[in-house]
Length: 576
Image 1 (tube, rainbow, N blue to C red):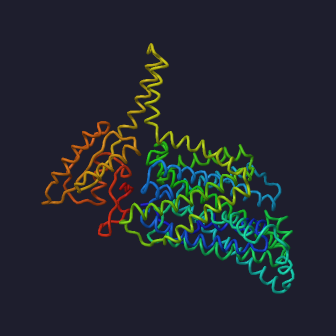
Image 2 (image 1 turned 45 degrees about the vertical axis):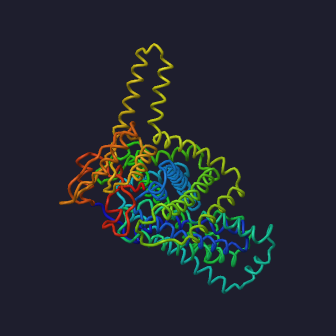
Image 3 (image 1 turned 90 degrees about the vertical axis):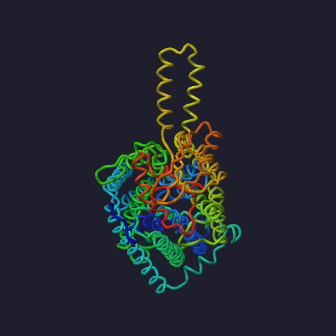
């Protein structure tokens, strides 16, 4: 069995991404909110507090890899879930390239002989190799980087605090006396919108929850929230206390290094530069680990090509990581490391994923109310969270209107690939019709293309699906069939009733299925009465016997009396 991550290891992987935000987000907030930046950052921490519960409820109820994609897959249509998946992959690509590029730029500021572009590609290659070796090995590297980063921040804040006490309040008072553009409300809003970038990485833990030990996931959310709540507002306040705002604006890309140089001298500035290079590199690792769990789930659900599921001796889906590396390098080369373009993708994609996760929580409450969950978000907290993130997207579009156009340039090709996989049966059928018109004489070319298209169509359609039930409710069964027709390329459905010893067969259930089979001639519904006890072992047995993956097996939403947890059933999906 693969090694499961403990609290520190799991926190380190996602924590490097979210904690690296302090390198830029405090300066960004000061640029837009001036002396009120620390308040904007506290507002961000408050929103993140609500999202702790939102993520905790969704992943607690559905503890499977995939994040927002998994949440929406089990609560709404597969196409909506696919949109969330596409946005998350885009977010990870932008994160990996931005973090890798910035890490090398920090290193370049210390050792100018380092060439930025080739070394960035080499860095991406190194972390690709690490995740291919396995998540356990990756977590050790992440843990070292994370602990060194926290230590560096504590040292920096301590020296800045000492310097502030010794030098007095003159700089702080003069900064607070400066006029601001517009109203305090607009300054706080724009500062909040820009500072929302400081919580990117919070969603990552949900994408590798299956690799974490039991009970670790909510602790990773708590730990990330503590880091963001303590360091981001504190660093912004200390910057205002020891450096004029005009200097902050001029040196926004290396604010922490300037703070270190001011409070402790060149050695502290050098320490921060080394720390920045390391923790931003750790954020690259976060992207690889998060996207690995997500893309594996997408491939299992036939949203991405099946060959991506091939594993090496370590059990790693190495083709996923190679594909992700290739995509990151291609974006790096196309944009030539232009952070403005990448930031546009990053900002809107990440915040859109957070909104979709909130919507997933809303649908979970409405459509899966019977599903057990260890914690619940409040309705008020849920709506505040969704509204706040939506406001942050609006704010970022106001700050950088061109980001929206750049974001669409990357989103549309991604959606074309994903939605081709999702609707390829309809596309293949359309191609067959078009071939009839294009080749009226039906010559050799027609025959080859026609045969190949039919082979592709058959390879998709031959996949069987399973729904487990013992209830004779024809309305429910009708909903199940409609869901599968609308969301899956399905021609064959097995409806399975597992009967324990002495249990009498449900005659009405069989009659209802025969009725539905006549009503839906495009799908063959087969009723099977299976002896035994429904549970994880029976699911594994049937999956092996019928050669049907567990993620193509469905159940209705279980209630409080259900004897198993959802994660114990493998990747069985909830569809009603």
